[in-house]
Image (cartoon, rainbow, N blue to C red; front, side, top):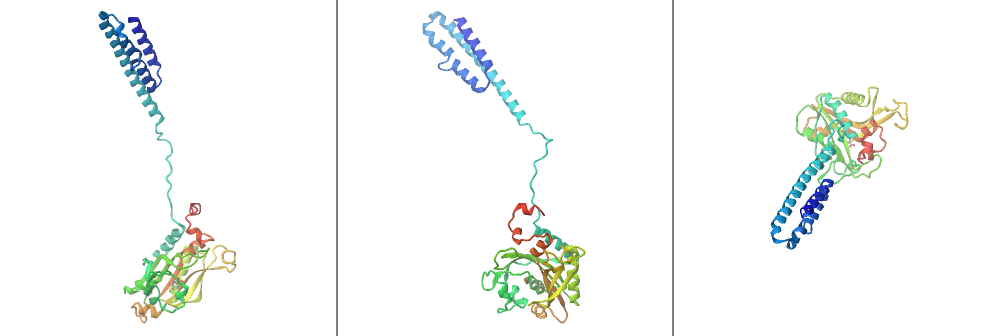
Length: 339
Ligand code: DAH
């Protein structure tokens, strides 16, 4: 019996030593110590052992069992330690590797152009103010000398919330809002979103941006307007840029003009960009109409001023030579990343 016990132990130890993982160890445990295991079988065969030998055999089995269990546990611990070590090795963080690049966004071309534009005007002493996008008819039309039946209202067809409240069609209502405060002198620009019920195409969108400008003080003349626009154009489009003013009509200015700049692509010689004329139209402007001044509470006998309205998308497209306005709104990274 003793030999048998030793043989079982030896075989068990060998098997345990060869075990490669925790599953192997578990299998060995069941095959020896389990219900149908070798040692258990020996205990079950106790009935065939002479009664006086039983305590001895019992003791032997128990001893064998204990030493096998102890060895199993030791091996298990060792194996666990090895597994942990292996895992640590594989999960090592190499701090010398370059970091993963975080993808940061950047300014939209419209915003780059606006920041540029604001920088020039702020440099000339202008204040940047904003007005509401949802506006009263009174500010958007009435106070700007565009009465109910004026054809300009048709051209600037928009989205109405009620009969009197609408999405502003231009940034010009900010003029009226600023004049109404009565604080003089006024020297502001006002960028913002405007709305018209236009179909989307390469040069139109139901929602786009304008930058309004307004200067009111004593003794302001058309020469101030021309000098200001000329200075801005030179700083914005390049020092070679020249400006010219063509007579035009706007209800809220008198006289009114449209301003053109020399084509910065060809320098005025004529090219595809300027459709051969050498000039590119960039804004509407004029001397604030005396009726507008009066309606907004300013005495036109004492004060005068000029106003202008720049289409932000228009100057952005020109500055970056983009030929389709829709690109500005599609949020296609491949396009936006180029600026
Ligand atoms: N509000 C005009 C438009 O949307 C642009 C404009 C023209 C603004 C002349 C002005 C101005 O301030 O004086 O077409």
